Every structure is written in C-alpha cells, then in structure tokens.
Length: 193
Image (cartoon, rainbow, N blue to C red; front, top):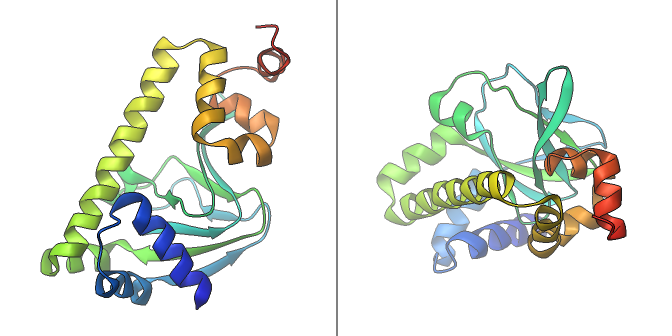
C-alpha cells in the first residue's frame, strides 16, 4: 500500500502538485497493481490500450517495428506515466509494444473509469488534462530534437532530462531512441562526434 501512495504522489507531483489528498486517494482507489518480470510484455502490438500506467518500480520501454527493426519510442521508470495515447483515445489497436527492461511494478488506471471520474470530479479532470498536455509537449520536444539537433545534442538532452535512461537502459535501445546506430552512439559517448 505504501508503494501505491508513493507512486501516485510521484506522478501527481510531476503533473498536478496542487491535487488534494482526496483527489490522490481517488487515483489510489482506481489503480490495479501488476508485477512484471524482465522481458515481459505489458502491451502487445495490435492490442487496444485500456489503461494509463503509473510506473512504481523498474524500467519499461515502448517500441514499434519499422522495416523489421525495433525503434524505441519511449522509456518509463519510477514516477513516470506510460500510455499508448492514440490507442487509448481512439480505442483502436496500437502499433506499440511495452516491455519491462527490468523486473517492474506498475499500477494500471482503467481509462474508461478515469474518463468517467473526470466528467464528475473537477480535480480529476484537471489531472487528466495535465497528463495529456504533458504528453503532447514531450512528443513535440522529442520531434523537434529529432528534426533539428545533432546526434550529440540529442544525447546530451537525454542525459540532462532522463539520466536514469542513460544509466539503466541497454545501449542498443538508447541508440534506437535517439535515431542513431549503436556505432554512432559509441562515438558520441566517446566524444569523437
């Protein structure tokens, strides 16, 4: 129970720190715990996403397949949210896969119940809106980084904003996320690029 409270606090504090203890309790009551082994899939390609996921312990990555290769879309770790936003909002099958890179504990918030609560409770509505806003801003920053920054700048941004990814994720996944080959990533890390 303590892990659930800590996880909800971490997620809420990063998106909507003004949320009252009552609002946080509503989220806690909504959450369903799931433990994952390393390598276990949380979301499969072709599945309809029905949850917003709060990561309590461990690291997960979301990826998709392009020309037969895995392309890492996102990393999530303690205090982060994981969601397949397009699938969630449209209730259509996702192209993304979410897998545990480490043994993990996550809390699943059923999207339909969260949406219903957001219609009835203003504070939940604000939290939901802030989650969506954060996701859109993060996606835009990432897209701009891919379009306008050099390999070194992309790596430095990841180091600055998500040092846990640099410490914990396999280099092949980091390279994929930064849209570079493992060899280019090695040169960037060595300072020769």
